[in-house]
Length: 115
Length: 112
Image 1: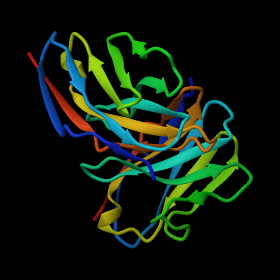
Image 2 (image 1 turned 60 degrees about the vertical axis):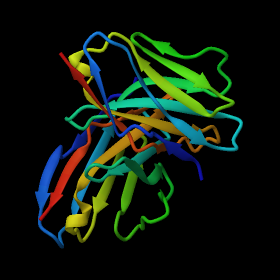
Image 3 (image 1 turned 30 degrees about the horizontal axis):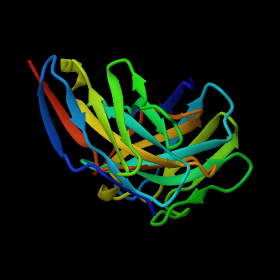
Image 4 (image 1 turned 120 degrees about the vertical axis):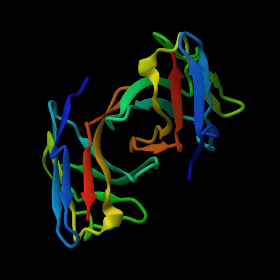
């Protein structure tokens, strides 16, 4: 079974600075996808960004970008210009391209943005 | 993008009772997923619900405890049966889409 590891239980960053959240995965699959979700205290899961294993470029969505290193099996989320509203739990999730489309989640990183 | 609603948004229940959670999607989807998030934990997949067939349960989850219905391509229910305090969690439904997966707002369940 795939294992998703987020080694940072908590991260602190000052407003307007950039922060990197780490995620590594263990798989022998060749075709897969990686998601990042944000979960504020309300509990909803907000999709942020997706990276496919065959994508040639690192994914970027606004202030969110991925540092995808396939050989190292890591996909780190970079949030630029942090805002107070970025304070939340962040989950990395793995998706195997077999058609079953279920997600395996990491343990999450709690990000706190200070003024 | 898919818009997903869940009912109820939260509930407080007594142990030994059952609660049915509804998930409604604004478009037709083949697959729907039900996840559980225990307090302070990550999300764990309970089961995959396909229309017209029985749900497929993940290891550690059984149909008697978490019966699921999928009567059509836009709706599903998850029942948490014979509840105990350990069932206190957020329950979320989700649907896949191209290069993403959308989640409902979740149902916060507290079992006393």
